Image 1 (cartoon, rainbow, N blue to C red):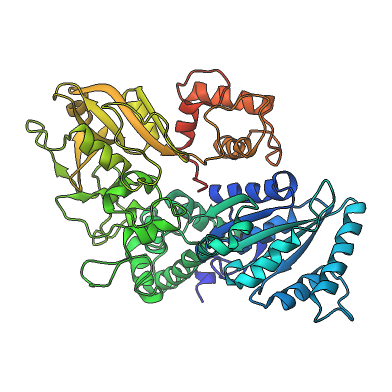
Image 2 (cartoon, rainbow, N blue to C red):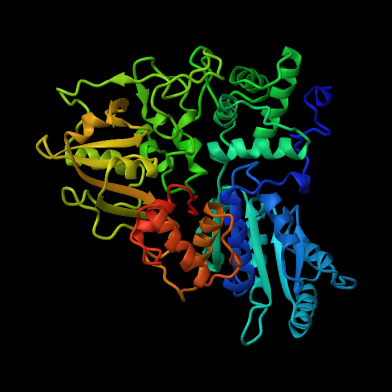
Length: 551
């Protein structure tokens, strides 16, 4: 129907899996590296856990994993694990082509045969991996049976590596007291989150290109709208984008607009998913619900103020849709530029940041006390932050994944961070403000509202001191240097590969070698950081502006 109209040779947004259309975001690449590390080097025969919301690409990652494992690894894949323990054992044996003849119905015989198979594989230099998809559907007694399989071992090595893929409910299941023995054997965890705004645009462009498009058929405003209405969930992106193309074809347009994306989302998304318009009266999920999957449970039940920090500045602030023409909410901090028009957008489709308040710099209503400002900066991270630290200081010992840096910088340096920081205003009797610097302007957040100020208004009062809270995976130490080894090195290598396509290093090797040191030096020079080749707090702080958190 619309394919010929747009010059496409196949449908670009089919929800059926097709390896040619696979798009690995930064988070997907990190998750894949995490799985590989857990299976090949860091697992030691324990469990590897990958969770994520529905439609975020867990099964796709498992397929990518299967295609990229070394030849000496044998894999059994279970797609429907909701089985009693005995039937689960039989299914595992069948996947590994272990004969169950005369053993069905006997747990001991099945385990004995599986043990003999694993010992033989070990003798041949092969590793055996069991991947269980939709693992949240495992019965508790079946999970206990799976745990017992990890007891099959030699004096030096466990014989079976188990990967659990599941929805966030899997984490709740493994938190049960009666399954604590299994939870303690999980050697690698990763929570897969949805695409951010930039990745959503890249995802749309990638699939269109594979389908034969000569140009991106979605305007920048349409890309932002797709992300807003789908939350960056690939499956929902496909559904909305497909319908938007059909609507564009029916309207006789050559490019998808934000208004047509909104119309498509209204037609195909259930009311509880993705969006709410002020005039429809549809219920909208709370911000805590929206972010819970993205933050891996760090801040369940987040308030709107929590979005100022832990929504990760680019992820999903744009999902706060109802915006007053005079006041932008804290949700606008994520990606909103200073107020300006978007020529490709339907003027009826408002995005946070399209309108902003004008501050009275004489009264400085946007300044706060230290206690108020710190509370706003750290809100939603109460599980990982201690009491309010000393005035103008970071916590003495922040608990990972929370990191804190106190330093002095100029507006241009803080603009590069693209997230809110706490700044001290020297001329206002120890008053503070939560601010995000962008395009020679400053977005200041106070009392649940945001307003835009000119940089000059801030610089006349600002001491240059700022405090930044950011999130880095807990397994990444505060300093990495040449010669170090571990999953933190893998995380940095993934960042290096994305920031510099020319970066040449084995991303599956968790070793900090000369290539990574050279990248660190070049990255530090380019960003005005001390050029020492170490991956320290200042470098991690800058990387955190682009990379995803592994909860």
